[in-house]
Length: 151
Image 1 (spheres, rainbow, N blue to C red):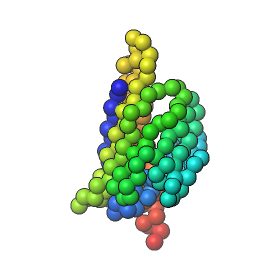
Image 2: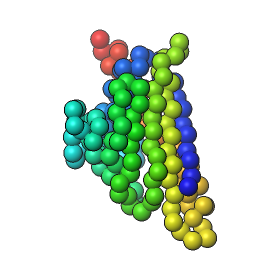
Image 3: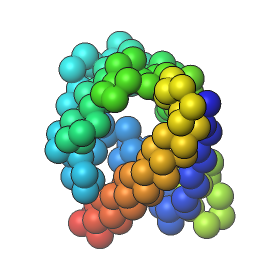
């Protein structure tokens, strides 16, 4: 299994950052994401616990379920189905309010069952997902800042 950790601090209150991050359909604004839609709303809110989101990133397709939702501190998810097929053990995003803003820590653990070259494939996808996660967090920051300026 490969573990990837990405962190970013956004100069905005935790509630605003959490709200922007958990707006699943806004992921379609991120370069490389063709579409992202909620196919099953959460139990108490559209993007919350139990929600299922589907991402179409061209060669990569993901179906994820929100498995924990503690507003505004944590969201956890599991990839339930993917193309290419991968095992996914953990998807966790923590939000911590700091004097500089909101620190986001995003951790995921995944792996591909490919004999001999599996670890190399994991590393390659880890690099790719690292870039993708940074693009997502940059988009979250842009949307938070734009909404703050619009007030």
